[in-house]
Image 1 (cartoon, helix red, strand yellow):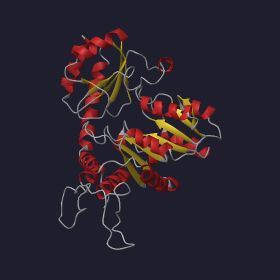
Image 2 (cartoon, helix red, strand yellow):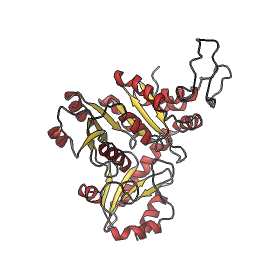
Image 3 (cartoon, one colour):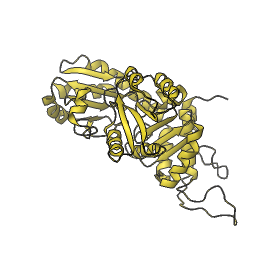
Image 4 (spheres, one colour):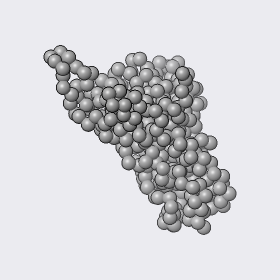
Length: 361
């Protein structure tokens, strides 16, 4: 029987403990597991390698993204680092120019240590014109952080396959509820699980999902070897959070669309960036000088880093999430000091709109 994603997520972990019939899957906190006899195993030996609670989570995430193998890690950046450890020194990567500042910082570190070479692109056309046979992989954010630029995964996948390159997509902003990159030709999907997938600003986690036979087993091997494992308790919290992902995300998106419509009517806002789906919005005020007072006047929306939680947050990329990108570089593609990024929560939409408008005025 075919099941919809809402049903799959609500049932995640059910019927995993037939001995007791527990509806909420147990947390297996043990770090080690006894062997029945010499040369025998229950399937679990040491929790860094494999844990029953983590298995439930990884099986659910693989199904959610339409992949073969999922690996959960201790942060979004540890997930990206693990993926890039798949590739040998000297690898060549093409990367979305507008991207999360933490990813940029990590790529710069790899480049500075001559571990890899990075080329940045703004569009599929530019990528096609500059791509060479030396490319190892393409790393894509769509929509981008924070300017919400969208790129066709299918078109980039076509280019990647023509050059025997892998395609890695960061799907944090839209989640598998709105975008499933593996079904559009990507080889690997990464998430900051800290954001929408867990959704309560209380878990730090990363997610990798693969649909490439050569990479599936290698990712599991590297995760065990390097050891960025997500803790057993956080895996259980992650499972619990996924059960309400559709409810949360749908409400956040509905709120975001109402906020976008309201903000476009405000004369003190000169630009609104929204991908048409999801719950991330960026805005440009009429001047950077307005930023400080605007943030100070917000009473409901919190001025804080991160995104995707049930509470609405506003971020100033220039000094927070994208501060590691050189000023001239980030401003060259539109990330200017008048820009703010808004992560819309599940609060009543009119309350959020009122808070934004009173802060503007």
